[in-house]
Amino acid sequence: MIRYLVKNNLKIMGRSMTNILLFVIAPLTVIAVLSSAFSALMESYQGVDGFRVGYRAAESGMSQAVVSGLKTVTSAQNITLVEYDEGDPKQLVRDDDLGGFVVLDGDNYTVYVNEDKGTEAQMLTYTLHAFFENMGTPSGATAESGERIQTVTTDYMPAIDSTDYYGIIEINYFGWCAVICSAGLFISEKKYKIGKKLRVTRLNELQLYLAKFLPSVLVVCCGVGLAALFCTLIFGVHFGNLLWTSLIVIMSVMAAVAFGLMIYAFFDSMIITVILVFAIVWIWGFLGGSFETYMYSGFSQSVQEFSPLYHINRCLVELSCMGKSDYIGSSLIYSGSMCVGCSAFAVLAGVLRRRGRA
Image (cartoon, rainbow, N blue to C red; front, side, top):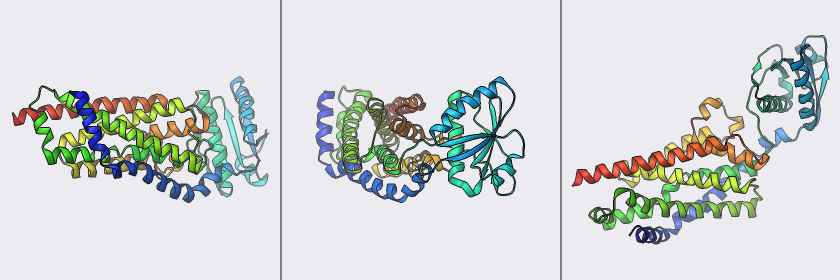
C-alpha cells in the first residue's frame, strides 16, 4: 500500500513541473548575479603578490618548532618571514614597510598589521589562524593598537573564487526550500480530501508520513542534481570530493524536507508553511553565508554555528577547495538530527490530529 502511495504522490508532484524547475532556474540566476557582484571581493584575497612579515620568537623549544613549521606554511603563500631581535613591532611595521609582525610565545601569538595593507593583513591573519588551528593550539591573537595599526582576527578563508563559492552555496540554499516541491501534493490532498480518506485505512501515521517524505526527497534531489550539473557545465563550478559532497547534499535535502513536513503537520496550512519555512531558512542562510560569504560575515563564529546551513555550507566549500573539511561530522549530525527530530514531531502531530478527529 505504501509503495502505491509513494508512486501516486510522485505522479502528483510531477504534474507541478514549474515548482521543480524553480530548483534549477532560481539557483542558476542567483549564482550568476552573486558570483559577479562579489568577484572583486573574493579575488582581493587571492591576488596578492609576495610580501615580508617580521617575527620574534621566545627562546623556548616550542616557539622555535612553531617558527620552523610557520616558515614552511608562509613560504607557500609567498610570505617571507624576517626575524627581528629588537625594536617595537608597531614601529617596525611602519618603518620597514612590513605586511605585519608576529610575536610568538610558545603556542600563543600576537599579530600586528598595518591597516593600509588590508589585503595583506587578511592574508596574514587567515594563514596564521589556519596554521595554529591545524596544530591544535589556541588560534587567538592578542590585540595591540597604535597609530594606523590594528589587529585583525577572523576565520581562515580557503582559496576559492566567487563562482565556485556561490555555485555550491546557492544550490544548497534552494534545496532547503524543498517545501515548494511538496506544494502540489498538499494542494491535491486538500482539494480531494485525500488525507481524510487515508486516515480511515489501516495505514499508521508513520507510513502516511513516509508516503510524502520519500517522493519529496527524490524529487528535490533530482532538482538539486540538475542544478549542480548545469552549474558545472555553464559556470565551471568545482564540487570537490563528489562522494562526501553527494552524501552531505542528500542528507541536507532530507533534513529540509522533514523540516517542511513538520511545519505543515503543525499548521495544516500551505500558506503558513511556506511563509515560516522561507523566513527561517532565510535567517539560517543569512547567518550561514548564503548571501554574504561566511568568511566576511559580521557575525561571530559562535553565532554562525547556530545555523545548520553554516555547517553544511562551510563543509561543501572546504571540500571543493581543499578536498577535506573538519565540518563533515557536524554537518551530518545537524542534518541527521533534524531529519529524525522533525520527522518524529511531524508523525506525532499527525497522531494527535487523528485522535482529535476520532
